[in-house]
Length: 166
Ligand SMILES: Cc1cc2nc3c(=O)[nH]c(=O)nc-3n(C[C@H](O)[C@H](O)[C@H](O)COP(=O)(O)O)c2cc1C
Image 1: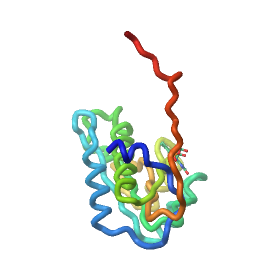
Image 2: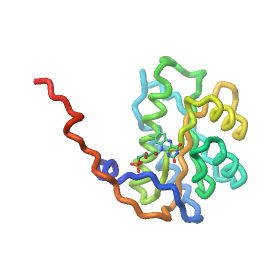
Image 3: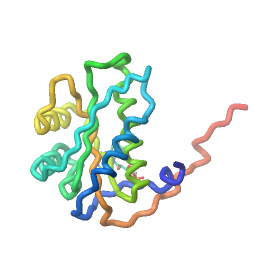
């Protein structure tokens, strides 16, 4: 797995060819393999391939425009009716979303995390576009597909940020 951790980069340009449903299932399995507080697994995932909806979702924030050219968007949401530890719901979703990005990398796809929560205006727009039930709270948008740009990860290791207590 550390191979994926050190290979993952944000990809914002995509080929138009679709992502195989077998790969999408692997990505969703990776998402749901994430740890969560009290094992509450508070997530649900919308997998959007409808082009009109993709274009609408790409306009939900000033920083989500690149989603417009993705063949698939995954929108992880919190199901608020199932929370044992509500204070930790977004942390759980963040971990699941990182698992999505790592599995995307493992499958030679590319993707990027586009922030939705905790910005209420973005959350409202996504809820409207996807016609989400009131108990569902959109967390993020992951745009993904076959990469149409080549990037290598920067080495961000910084020893000055490490504090050993011995
Ligand atoms: C919580 C979070 C929110 C992000 N939101 C956006 C976003 O709205 N739009 C975008 O283009 N990239 C977004 N990104 C991607 C970051 O810009 C990117 O991870 C960062 O620049 C580091 O680059 P790398 O992912 O290639 O290592 C987000 C990443 C995280 C973790």
